[in-house]
Amino acid sequence: MSPSWIDFFRGSSSDCPYVGVAFGRKSFWVLRTRGEKEKLQVEKIERYPMRLSLFTGSPSPEVATELSSVLSSVFEETKNFYTTLRVALPDPAVRFEVMELEKVPARGKSLNEFLNWRFNQGNEGTSHALSFSSQILGMDRDKNLFLGMAVDQGWLDVIQTAFQMAGLKASIIDMALAQRFNFFHEIFQENQKSGALITFEPEFWSVGLWDDQARLRFVRSKWWDKEILKVKDLPLEATILEVERIIRAYVYSAKDRSVENLFISASEEWLKPIGESLKKRTNGNCRTLSVAKMTNENPEVKRSGVVPSALAVAVQR
Amino acid sequence: MKLNTNFSFSFNRLIPILVVTGWGIFIIGVLLSVAIVESALRFNRENPQLQSDLEKFNKIPVSLSSKNISLPTNEELEDLRRHLKGLNSLQAGGGRSVSSLLTCLEAILLPGTRLLSFQQDQQSGEIQLVVEALNLEDLSKLLAVLETDTDFSKVTLTKQSQSQNGRTNWIQFSVDLMENRP
Image (cartoon, rainbow over all chains, first blue to last red; front, side, top):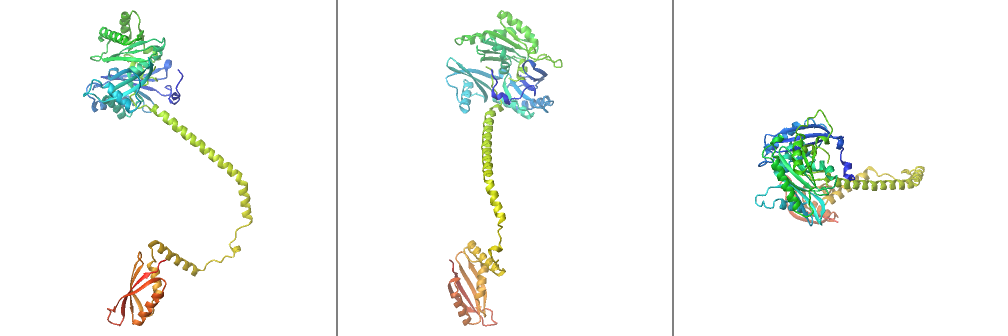
């Protein structure tokens, strides 16, 4: 793909570091990288636990205050040089839908009203204020594929206020799956086949399905009951069965739908046992995506337990 | 297809606006440059003619004495200033100034008469005078002079009485005048 003219205005990641912040409910990861693709160098990885939970219950100013105080200390060392900051919201906190529309509403008020109606369907009377993001994915059988995402406005405000209080401005705030999908996109595109990415993180799991043109079409994710730090605590069998049901439902929901490739993404320690379990179930038709192999070795940085979302959000997309 | 969704305000959205603004400024700059170059070329073309005109003027200097013009005297200048002052006051208030009228009355007043009060309405041009005279003859003379004066269009004697100051036989009288305005 030829570079866009807008790329001319973008700074090179070799000149200035990229800092990614990947949120969970009980903690968040901060990861700093420099460089691109094969030369990607991880400079820092750190997990910060939170006393108050994010994306649970009603958002409160106390959460923003606690988050901003942690962020201020985290970004103390980078405040003297230009840094590109990106944020990944946990998959279960974001609602994702790809709609097939005859006509896409015009940007602005009408699009916002449409998305508000769509994401609040069935919640009349108890609807929450939502913030939206959208993208047109192209055409499929004379219909426009229109991707819509929604996140609770209150929690988004908490995140943005915390960054503002810490004197930071995130250039991108997006769903973690969108960051991972972009990060591994070249691998997904290799054989021009449809596929699924199953991700296991300490606080949630998610599955994203795409078509043969590598367009993300369906996403499902769930929080774990509690934060899982060891792979043996994962309810692996039950999760794999649920993922299988989701994939079957997707494939049979419309004509010409398929999932031909299966990819697994998780922290390095979890990847092998999860991969072995899934390979048994799929007769070897699945591939693990190693985060470590995507980056240059840096002996000074300890990578144990680093979640794929944290790395994916800390690179130029 | 990679995703480019974003819940934050992206500065990339401003790039097209900035590019259009940049092009606008560039085009204005080009037009200004063309105008400056065109002006410079025109000046360059006209320059020899201007140079020759300048040389011509240098050869024939303009002299005040050659025109045989005499300068006004101090009295003439003072008179001119007074007229100008009167004209300015006429334009500013719609009538003559108090000082101008008093100067005029001073010239009119006869020996044996004296001005006690003076009131002027600049909008309407009405003037009320209170004058004292030693006898009726002086009063008649003064009224006759006022009536013949072209500065006043109307002269009316409104009141006549013995002076309150009992030491001498001064006669006090009130006269209403109307300024003669063009």
